Length: 263
Image (cartoon, rainbow, N blue to C red; front, side, top):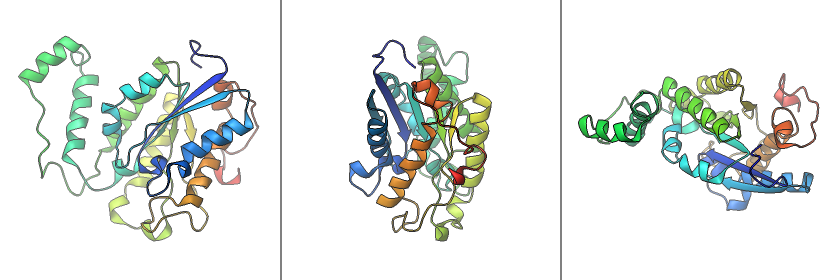
């Protein structure tokens, strides 16, 4: 927990896409807002502050370029709920440019130096975001870039004194599961689980089956019922390690790490 802040305040940041943004619904129906209400009711001894920094259509590359918004919020817990737009087969030129920006700024010795970074940008400018950039049969964010940027976010969270929590993707409706545009998504969920284990981050598993009526007509975005179910699943993780002890709230023993659907 960030010890520079009030001991009675818990600040949560959700960095995500259209699912935590509550796409197609009034803002109050989005699962982060519902989670905040549940936490406030269950643990009134704390003031639960929420910053929902979720934008429909975002990938990890898009979230990377606005990560300063996370720093400004000074979270105790950073929930990262991304992946659906990363794994779908619909490459976007701007996303590819942002991946290149991440590679340059965070994975080169000179890119992390602001002065050398400016020189590098002049000598070797990034490609423009033009139509036709990328492979139409590939995932929007390649798996290696997806893992690298998620890993960078977990490192940045720890540097701020926040606990990083990685969420698997919410499942699709049955008729959408065979959509070839989303075929890589199960593999990306595996990447999320593996990274959480390797980085010793919290893992919030929400990808198991949802009740009927959980989706809007497109079979991807959640209905009010689906958002409420997702809020419930996330809330259960706040009652278990490592989130509960990090936030200083009572711990509930659970076997959910073995079989999430039993929780």
